[in-house]
Image (cartoon, rainbow, N blue to C red):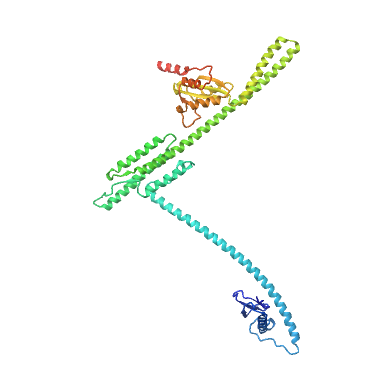
Length: 481
């Protein structure tokens, strides 16, 4: 590549030419960008042409700040001094041009980077704008669909099952089908050739208006049924929706207007999902309450065992000190008696330590409350209390009208295992099938005893009959009144 001659620089506006810089400004002199020379002769010729062109350009001293100024006249005897002056001026101009050119290149590079950054920012903004337009377009479609179905009384209300991780997907699919039924006019059925005042057009308008009005009433009833359904009250809510469908058929009998079976089944299913979710929520709350009660019961048992151990430790210390005193006085009779009592205390301490260490040890109880639940219901449970009757007395608090009667109460090293076995045996007879912590079963005390004998559980004492003293006395007074 042939180098660019001195003082010639690429034209910023036309990269195919080079232009002369006189030290303060660009002149009007331009020439093509030097091309690669084929050989040394061509390179020399190109250099000579550049020198000739440069000789034809006025210097800054000759031209000043205006193009076309006549050349400086040099005398014969002052040529050497003039050449020296021109050389110095040329060197100064070249240095100035190099500084200006470096500054221009840095400034151009900076502006180029800024332009690229601005362009990237504009591209990102355009992409964000496109995404926002897509979202708004989808929302516009949803709003249009909502307006279309709102006249039929179908609104996107808060459904209980939306909060269910298990039922939310099924609910969403059902709601899509419900909306599709409404928009495709498959929610209702009516006559197709009804005329009003001998006008088929007026007849169609009348049928459409009646369909919208009665379908809106049905949808409002369905929404109210879903919002007011309670756990365990599904049948009542379903009967309410059935009556609404019957009313639509009754009020629209003149044009055979009725809710289609497909649409009615979808709304019934939507109602069922609400009831299922509420039942699951209630069961979870009941299980949580039962678990908290179980933890409180375990805490009470641990506190009792701790207090009992502290009391026995004090008694042992007292008897040990008394025994030492008797032995010091030589009272062997009294000392022997204290040794027997001390042995009993040490045995009790060992029992308490065993109960505290073995969390499965405890008392299994079978109790009933004839006055509250009848003769065919028993409660089967276990407790780790030192005195198991404390637990029975707690169950017989003011929440029930009569006290519980105890049919069996026995200690076992695996009380949890025996309780779980009896619960499995009578699983099909549970009173509460939602909250399994409610340990009531439709069974008689005799049937529980048979189950214990069948599973080889030794029971020393078992009472099949219930005293129910307060209940029987209250009934006798009632009969006498």
